[in-house]
Length: 358
Image 1 (cartoon, rainbow, N blue to C red):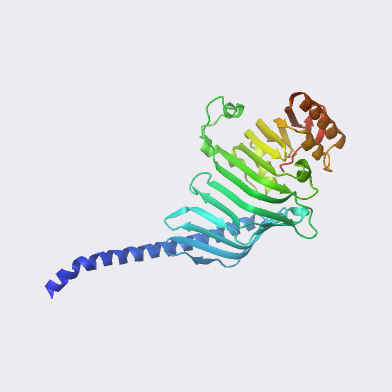
Image 2: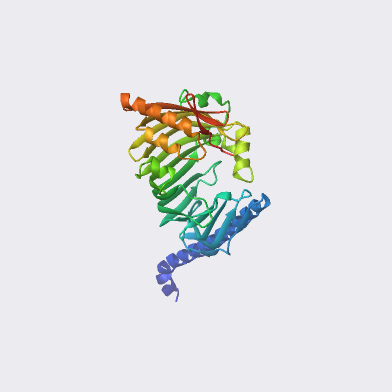
């Protein structure tokens, strides 16, 4: 009997080890899933305490053994301002061995409520967001939509875009830049590294189609519209508040700025490159600073702005004429738009209200 046990021991021991590992791993998976569920409820209660409305069905927990997967239906997140995002179904999952990186998928599309402007349906085969480095002072965030369509729902104002091949948004902890890389680097006196005070932002809108008859459609003469822009959001720790307006107001009051603004835009045959060393918001929430543009065939784009009800049409047409005259001589236009006193100025031309951040 003893000899039989000794003979089978080399076979039993590996199975016993595997069984122990499986039991321990299963206990870890259930503990992790319960922690995720509890933190989700705590986050929802925290938002409700700040005036948000948060609604979702009881999440279903699956994914054992290697993933933690939550699926919830009828998800709705409403800000105090009336802006809302709603999804028929949301799935969030992470590897059980790396719980600091999550991916969220909206497999059945989204509905966005733009305050008084009404609702717009967002439909795409791929709508996903990810968050990693959740233990850092600021995590790395990404949003991606592919082959996305926009449909304004009944009684809503028209949406500027009809479709887009790709929309991407990336946010990550700021990287250290060399001294002299921009005026903002020397203006901030702090011992904190860039990764703890700044956020690098990249936005990409690729091959978009404007709604028929809209300003983007007219600007590109029926062609495709693309925009890529990047900037540094300084002092992200000043971003605090129950909604976007109060959040941005608090950030501005704490000295927050947009640094190293760079971008490229293409509308049909027109193209432009833009840059600014520093942009910020004034006490009324409107953008201030200087934005430099180098454009090819800019007159059609400027003329398109005159179709908007928010711009000074006479000034915009004058700016378009001036741009057209320069094009005739050089083939390229260098423009400078200054945001001040709540308005956007191009030389002597008072074009429109400055963009409003809050």
